[in-house]
Image (tube, rainbow, N blue to C red; front, side, top):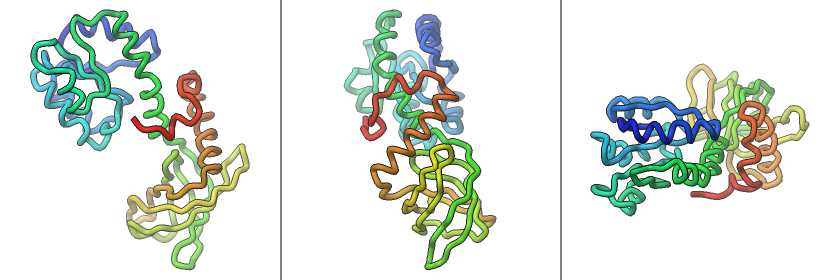
Length: 237
C-alpha cells in the first residue's frame, strides 16, 4: 500500500488483516516504485491524489515485470482524478475518500477472488523430479526445480537455445499422472538452467496440474481453495 495518509492506513490495515492479508505500507512514491520493480505482490493499493507521485506509480505499474498483473486499487479524493481515469490507467478497483470500514470490506471481499487467482497464476511449487526432454530428434534427461500452471524450471545436461520448442514428459508425484506437453524455452543459460513455458496443454492434463498445484498451495496458504470457484483460472479480468 502506497499512502502517507494516516486515516487511510487506520481503516485499510485492520480491514485487510481481518481477511488474513499481510500489508506492507510505503509512505513515499519513489521508494514504493523501487520495491514494485523487485518484489511481487498479490495486490497494490495506490493513494493517487494525496501522495506526491502516486498517480505516476499507478500509470507505470502495468509496465513493471513483477506486478503488471497484480490486482490494483486506486484511492481517490474526489477532486483530482476521476474513477474513469483511474480505470483507464490500469486500476481494477477504486476507493473514494473518506474510506469507511464497511466500504473497504465490500471492496476487498469483491477483489479477493482476483487476488487469489493471481497468486495461483504465479505460484511455483519447488519440485525435484526427472523430466524427459525431446528436441531435434534427441532425448535428454533433465531435473525440474519448480513447477507452475504455466511452465517449469529445470536443469539440463545440455543447454537448450532460447525459443526452442521441445516436448516434455514427466510424472506428477502423489497423483502418478504422466504429463506429455509441448513447451517453449523462455530463458536459458550456458550452465543448463532453463525456464520453459507450457504450450497447447490438453484440457484434461491442465485440470490435473491445477488440482495438484491447488493442493500444495492450500498447504502453504490455508483457505485459498474456498475463495476461488473451479475453473476460475481460465477466466481473464
